[in-house]
Image 1 (cartoon, one colour):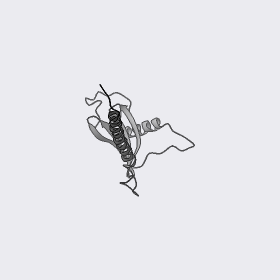
Image 2: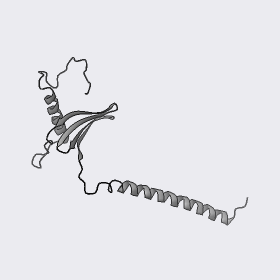
Image 3: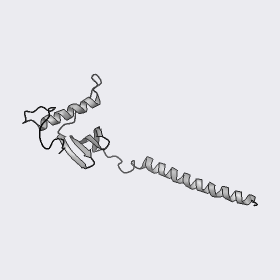
Length: 138
């Protein structure tokens, strides 16, 4: 079996071109991902802001979203997305003099929304009930 020096040169050229094409695609992919969100909304304000996210399980979470001057608590699950509560004003933010734990602030906001929804009932928020719809999110 004889190998010619020309065969090794052609082999090196082929792999050189392969690596050049792959490098070009990787650079193009990087540039597209880096600059993809910067061209569409020049000068416009963000109308929707995510204020807080609380993961309940790997596929379920609660998200507090601000849309214009209204806050909306939404639940996301594999079954779909549902609006749980609406707030007219934005939640209070922690000041530098009295920092709040983000998890506690979210829990307090959630408790307030639950209390607001159960205003006419005498049952406390944390007590168990014997409703047939227990555990369902509407």
